[in-house]
Length: 127
Image 1 (cartoon, rainbow, N blue to C red):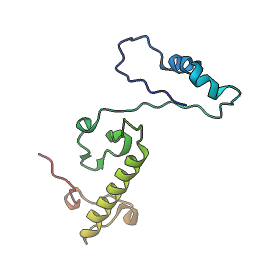
Image 2 (image 1 turned 60 degrees about the vertical axis):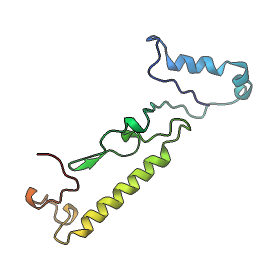
Image 3 (image 1 turned 90 degrees about the vertical axis):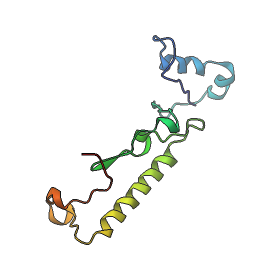
Image 4 (image 1 turned 30 degrees about the horizontal axis):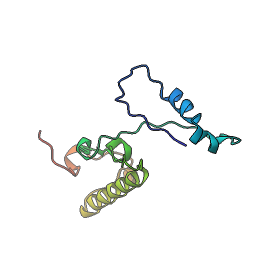
């Protein structure tokens, strides 16, 4: 059982936890919960801004992936699939970038970072 409350609600004193407790006492919900045992409890914050709210995803040395990038299907409240897929695509891109250049020695092999001049820039940024 879950309850999603947008963080843009008008009442600043609204308590989502209390609203969830109240929701569970509604006759249509209560009939399914009576006699049950709570085996776990959790809370999540869902970023549901949509496609036009996705930020720039890459920056020098990193990328935003999964939920931190805003990849959530808010209508279906599904984010795991898009989070995993964004991680898979990022790994494939990093692998491709590293294997296309023959002169790259990984940090795992040497234990030290190469000089900045020998690093491969994956995206271009204005200086």
